[in-house]
Length: 138
Image (cartoon, rainbow, N blue to C red; front, side, top):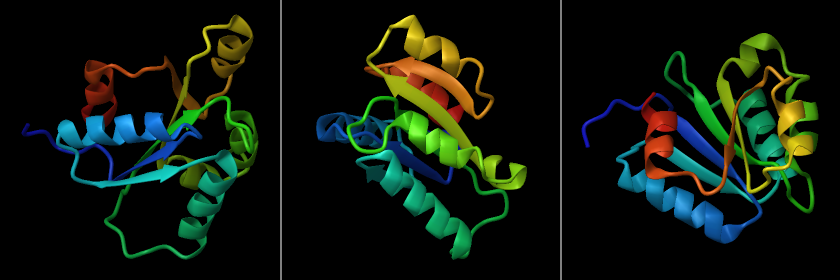
């Protein structure tokens, strides 16, 4: 495929190893040539993001990162991650697109998400090939 990456990095935050593996394979299959990071919970994701903000690597101007964030995880879940993420300044938050993913179709999970501006979208697992392509390339 001959698409232009919309993102420099995709961060997969999910405690399910199989889901992360499937998403990585799908992302690779779609021709994404940026970095893909898999992290098992929100705490490790926040540590990763915070460390990159505090000690930034040489980057291209305007670098953007897509975060596919699982809602339900046993250690630090998606909600806890978001509480910390929302404390970042606007400039930092604008470097990320947060997409919440979950197998939950329960309105108690979905409705509050629509009220959080930091969450761009809620996707019910599994993510289809077409939807992943739309996320990556726009």
